[in-house]
Image (tube, rainbow, N blue to C red):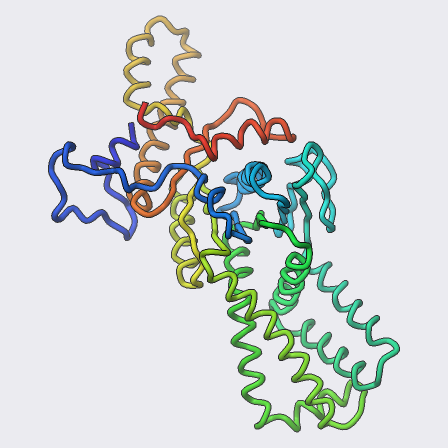
Length: 386
């Protein structure tokens, strides 16, 4: 099958990364595959230091199902597990067949698994209102600072999501969960989300660097929103920015620590999805975020290859009705396409990534019982060498 074919290096990748065939052994007897990564997510379960697990990929590839299944498996080995959806189009409620809100919601059937769905814009409005309420009876200076901060968050593109994300990280950290699984939005939104800590850290660093040159202007601008002297306003504003920068730095450090954070890429065996996964892996590398797991969903008969099925079809085709022949022919065409892209996926990532193949089912993965049953494939996958 394609796994064994990949081990023999029969496939050639269609992307920029190519298999180096120089100095390779020419016989199967000399090929040592003992160091190849295991085709499962068991490495995540075994790494007890992990605190943040992001699950992402192209839209419609099964990110939510993978996130929920991973959360179900983690709940077997961790004391407290939280699944957080950062996708504006939330699906956790549909996956678990129960209402999941903006606060951690216990999942029925578990005593240590919670889920929550967040919305960046709504959470940002709440955060601003909270800031306003906290300074309602405070000094004029604090009121001026809050007004200016609100104006900044309303006028700078992307700052609302960034600030909301920092608030989310603070909230999640305070909830005292052993591990948090993030069910993220499609790739583009997720990459921007993960870049927020770096972007904010740089932006706040520049503001603080320029305080000596434009300190008077900052103080006067702040004073316009109500408050005391420009000098006092400047110091209070810079203090608020420094507090935010400290939080962002902590989040950034955690993201770039492979002992604490990892990213699971999810795809299906089609060109656009594999291509998007390659882009995602490269972008994660730029941000310094660990990624060494790929889940390939919707695989037709992972334990068989197209050649085996093709032989069976040729032997039995004459005895099948015309409609059955057409159905089998379409299935074979899809299977051949999947095998090609799965082979390319192993070419690209097989040496360094744990590539897990998840079978296409004839039933929907919804509800706790179905998720529990399907999640076993993440840890104990089908035998690819059978």
